[in-house]
Length: 217
Image (cartoon, rainbow, N blue to C red):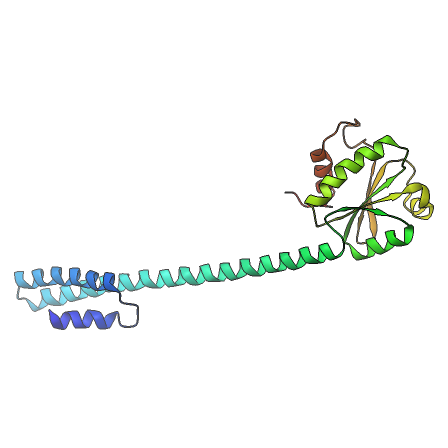
């Protein structure tokens, strides 16, 4: 039995043998000893040894699976850490470009600077005397703080004739959606927001999501 125990321990020598594994071996040996005591047949002893080795092989396979699972978990952990690192880097870039707030653009030169730097720009063309422009202001102020992935700005249409002419801004308020310096859509008045003044911030947010200007949260 001592010889058999030495063989089993050697079989596990390339793997981590802890107290649980040793207890596992002792249980195997106890069953082996009982079978050997019941018969002196060499064939029976040989069969018992083969059965014991099969049990040990299963233990080794289980150990290898645990190791493989740990390697996979480590790989996924490293992947997630890298994703978070890239997200942090991107957020810092957005903040440097003034994302995360709703900015007033004073002139057309500043407007062109903004759309060159930021991939996604939500620009509200307003007129100070128009009440509905103030409604847009309230909602855009809230959305801008939630979505760093877009730059939210407002510009006085009465002082930006060149830009308004190029983008064909004729009705106020109008929100121009600009991606990679190109106009992709215009939200004219409240016609896409139930045409009522009491539309919700969520409705405007969902509209911007559908137009691929911001990400759904």
